Image (cartoon, rainbow, N blue to C red; front, side, top):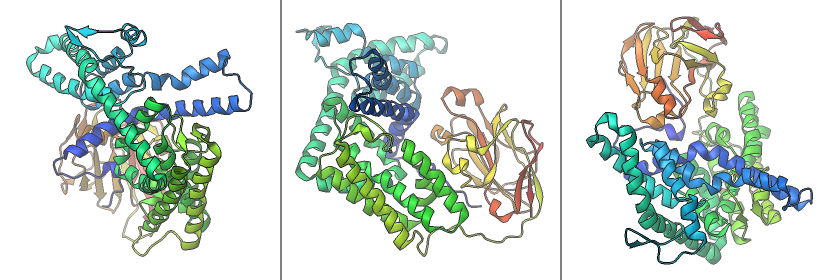
Amino acid sequence: MTVVTTSSEAITEKKETFMNKLLGAISGSFAPILGVLAGSGLISALLTILTTFGWLSNESGTYAILSAAGHAIFYFFPVFLGITLANKLGANGFVGGSIGAALLEPHYVDLVTSKAQDVTFLGVPIILANYSSTVFPILIAVAIYSILDRSLKKVIYKDLQMFINPLISLVVIVPLTILIFGPFGTYVGEGLSVVIQFLSAKSGILTGAVMGSAWSFLTILGLHWAVIPIFLANLAATGLDPLSAMVAAAPFAQMGMGLGVFFKTRDKDLKTLAASGLVPSALAGTTEIITYGILVRFKRTMIIVAIAGAIGGAINGALGVKGTGFALPSFLSIPVFTPIGLFLLGTLTSLIIAMVLTILLGYEGKNDLAPVKTVRNVKRETISSPLSGEIVPLSKITDPLFSTETVGKGIAIEPIKGEVISPVDGLVTTLFPTEHAIGITSEDGAEILIFVGVDTINLKGQHFTSVVKQWDKVKRGDLLIQFDIENIKAAGYDLKTPVVITNSDQYLDVVLIKEGNVQAKDKLIRLDV
C-alpha cells in the first residue's frame, strides 16, 4: 500500500542528526504561532492602506488600538516563543513564557529606558538591552532551560516538582539570560542582519535569485524554519528585512504555476485541486495545497517555480525591496512591503512567468506521478469504524492533503477513547515508526489509512503505543494502537483522525453510512464497485 506523506512526515528509522533536531525544534516552536504572526502582519498591511489613502489618522485612538492588535505578538515575541519552544522541547511552557516575560517586565525595562549605569547582578556587570521582538536570546535561554528541567526531574522528588522546578529554573535561567544568553543572542541576530544587509548591498540580484529560487524547496524540506528567525531579527534590529521580499517571489511563482495548471489540465480532479490551492495562497499566503498537491507531484513544475522565483527574487533584491513587518506573502499582505510598486514588479513577474511557462511547456514529465487510475480486483465491502467518537468531514482537517482528499476519500473522527482497532480483516501494510498512523489492506482490496491527529508526528511516538507490527495479519476489531488523549491534547495537538481509503479511485463510490457519533466496530463506510 502506498501512502502519500508531506515532507514533514518523511520518516526514517535512522538516528536523528543534530541539524534535524535543531530544525525540528525551530519548526515546532514557530508552527503554532505562524497563523497569528500572519494575521498580525495583515493588520499592519490594513493600517498602511487606511493611512495611505487618508481614511484613518495615525494619531487617532482607532489607529492606536488596531496597531496594538497588530504589534502585540511581535513586541511580546519572547513570551510566545518561550512557551512554544519549551513545549516542543518537553519542558514547562509556562516557565518558558515566564523567562521571556522577564525580559519585558517593567522593572527591567525601566533599567533599559533610563539608561542606568553600572547595573550589576550579585556584583556581575549587566549589559542592558531591549529584548522586545527578539528571537535568538529566548531560543538560547529556553534551550538551556529544557536541559536544566530534565536534570531537575531526575533529582527532585516528584510531588515537589510542580513548584520547586519552576523556582530553580527561573532563579537560574533569568539571570543567566540577562547576563549571557540575551547579549549573545542579540549579537548573533544583529550579526546575521549585518551579513544579510552586506550581501544584499554587494549583490542584491544574486542574493535575491538564490533565495527566490530555493525558498519553495527549503519549505518542502522544512529548512525554511532556520531562515524565518533571521527575518524577525532583521525587523527587530532595523525595522526592515530584505530577505522576506526576496523569498516572496517563490509563493507568487507557485500561484502562477497553479494558475497555469488550472488553465492547462483537462483532469477535473487536478483542476479542482489547483483552484482550491489558489484561493488560500492568494489571500493568506498558505501554499501547502499547491506545494504538496502539485509541486512535489510534477517534477517539471519544480523547474518552472525555481526559474520564476529566481527572476522575481533577483528583481526585488536588485531594487532594494524590503519587508516592514512579518507576513506570509499574498495579495493581502502587499502593503507590508516597500516600495509597493517595486515589490509588485518582482512578485507579479514571478507569477506571470510561472503561469506562462506552465501553459507553454506543460506540467508533466515522463516520470511524474500523474493521476493514473490503476485497475485492481477490489470487491464491494463495508469498513467498520476504527475509533469511538464524533464524525467530522475531512474538510475540517487542517492538513491540506486530507482536507482536499489528495490522499483519498473518507471521513475523520474526533476520538473519545484512545484506541484504534482494525476496521477490516486484512494485513498491516504500513506502520509509521512514530506509531501515530497505520495502514491496513483488507482481504477484499481496500487500502485504509488511519492517521491519529494533526501534526502528531512531531511527538515522535510519545503517547502512542502500537500493539501490532508491520505485515501482521489482523481481524476486524483487533486492537492496533493505543494513545493518550489527555496528554496529546495537553501538548496542543488536534486529535481529529482521518480514516481514508487511499485507493478510493478504484471504487465507483465511497459512501459514508454513519453520521454523528460512532462507536468502534460500527459500520462506517461502504465501498461500491
